[in-house]
Length: 237
Image 1 (cartoon, rainbow, N blue to C red):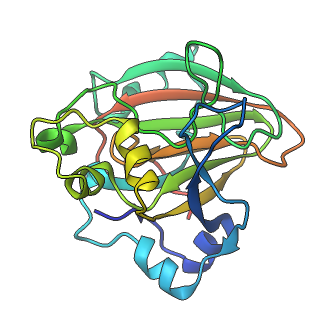
Image 2 (cartoon, one colour):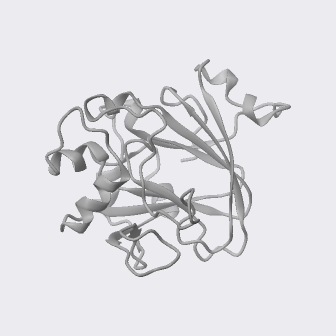
């Protein structure tokens, strides 16, 4: 499946969004060897790109990307309780992440602190045949700076099938790295997220990361996992 973003205004999406290709990084001490990174040549979305990433009524909720506002009403005493009214009693608060200013990508590994580049999450650890059952991630930018959500335009199921993985395969970031390293190509979009704004995205399906590249201020994000239907929060576009 290709990346699909919900919106009602093509121009509003175009204003927030740019697109580029990806490549395998080598010999960069800040990154794991083989990490997949977006190229620096960001471009506006063409009409063709815009059509390709636009969700329609056939896009299933589990595969949908939504740009969302904070819930209306008084803020909860504890940030972990923010999603309680959204309909999934089993939603999980993952905590907060702090990103420095001007980071090409933001996620680091747990070993030497190297950045991992575009990657897939594996909180639910569903096998390839059941990957569509994974929860989506809700993320809010708490500021103070702007940031970007980076998303590859091809999902991990398509990637694994191209690599001839079996249905009982456990998808991993290494699959995406091998896909790119062996000559396959894809695009990456970046979506600007201002402080107080957020997204719901299928981060166990689509290679992704955050970025603060060329942003002068750091940012902090709060994260949750849940099974939420489309339109559960007010959309920004």
